[in-house]
Image (cartoon, rainbow over all chains, first blue to last red; front, side, top):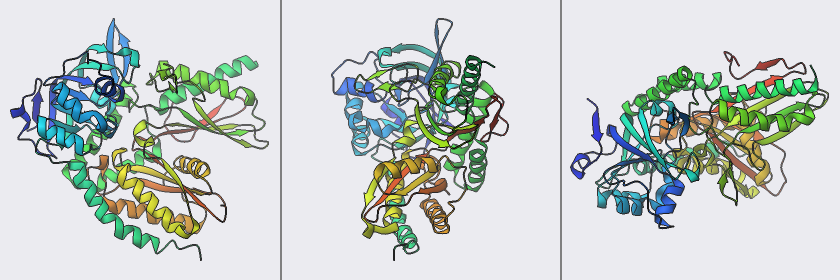
Length: 201
Length: 299
């Protein structure tokens, strides 16, 4: 049985979820990445979309014009870590509940998710056509002056996923746990290879 | 054909080839991904691989770019000095990129620096990026098209080591890149390592290394052994698909090298994501062509 989340998302919907859980999203998903974050946090511009209870997607899609509207062609996640500098404040300011992207995020986002009850989840990277077919409609676009990748695309999605929870509301960070394990393994492997590449004699 | 017709013909071939490369992974990558998928045990890793293969199937069926980040298009050219359109190739490739941007469609990925405006057609100052090698007396041209997204471009790093660091220092550098930025760059990755004198030479060689077909080995036996050692060692880290843990971390490790200054060891690392969109085409003087990377390709 797949777990699903529907926007608007409340604290009770997500507090029981834990890193590694898989969920699917129904409702409103808004793309927001580097410059969208910078405009709100650093430049103090007001976001043209009210994100309270909604989900954002670290993504810059390929869209095409169709019948006077827009069609989603290809939309996969981008590297979430680039938004680490802004995300804690972004969560606090907007009330966003679900942040979808690729790869892990850092301690500031973990703190934001813990304090304000929000999640970070991973959509499998590079699976952009799969994601596009889970977008029912592009409802509107804001900040198109930023160009196609950076604009805010307001999408209605159905069974959008798989979304793998990487930061939960309890302070867990799946990628940090994994990285600690990778780094533990690294030392002995590097040592053993190094013994066999002493070519300068 | 008149010169003008030949230029049109080559532009059309390259526009269609760029379009195709953005939608279909090359044969060697497909084969390697299939092999790695079969070895994964964990539920999470299997779910991610299922999504990857479903995505590729849908990209083919719907004729869409398989990853939304179609990169800043790069061309690595081995041009015969007697190829009849040598003087026109640069302009032809710029036009082909513009054409493919509309036809595919590709994402608009050229932001003019300092002006900080997206040009909207994937061309700009020195973009598409073109790297030239001239093959004396040959009449054909061989072009590698490479589309690297931002995700797998971010881990790129180069540095100059002191000789005391030795090849051991290269190993450490590669592992540090992989456990920090590599995790987020859409593993399983194809890892290129350049061993040379300076940052720019090592970096360029590391990029050329990931243009080689997966599994090919460096001609020097020591370098080939180091490729295998790094490959097995990185797989033992167990990054898994998307860095979520699993059986493998890489699709392969390739080293390219040059002779070096006795006082320095330049090392560069470039990685390609699992969605490694690389295509190789040879165009002959009569505009007939052969595609080496995708056996089933029809333009």
